[in-house]
Image (tube, rainbow, N blue to C red; front, side):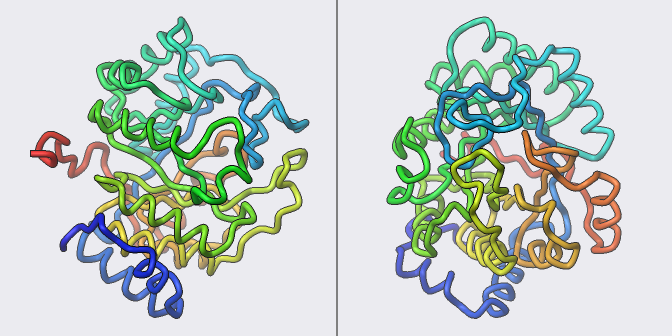
Length: 328
């Protein structure tokens, strides 16, 4: 199938607004044609540094702008990171994502410690993903050289709605970091959040940004807002399942080869609702008790779901094609 990066807003709008069952059917067909259907990547998220962030992201309990119940923790010790990564691997995870609540990476001893964490976890035979905030090209290179496989940096929402959610950085800051990650030849993990108060048009514009990048993100997390008491969005209503399915299905059609991750908000979904998401093209989940600071389904519960639905975990580094070959 031809991978397009020239989608127009009108085309995406037409796809997004199709009747849900028609949309799901097309997405499921494209998913079967382009991916190992029924194979799901299990990722585990470790918060290596929690809270105390000076950003003002309206949804985030880790921001110093909000009074939440989050306990601030300094950078985790290497031994603890290795222990958690080993547990994740034993539970079937092929990727471990290490998240630090920083606005941007600084060239200091903490970053040196993160580079050591990356090397040690990579040596376990697990894909390492980091989400540490904004990166320079040189910092991205250091992460790559240490064994970092992927870097997560979500655009969150549309360009037009962005400053309603975050004012301490801008949309182009996000895109610059994504560009630095690509240049350093790490894979890109980039998606967004729905339920922030945005419109359908904002969601369409967000998908347009992702699907018209020079190279599609290798991984596209679709998050549903989990309102947290004390944040600016604590009173937002939870999204309906049809909204999540519509986003996943549209993302699958626009970015056929990307891994589409059913991310935050999964804890509130029934097994049947999650099955709809897998049918619509989701082929990755986060597993483990928490996603940074919000609850997540129990791993045993997930394994029962996998067995019932006939899903199987994806192996690490599967079907990885070198970026140099893609660009050649």
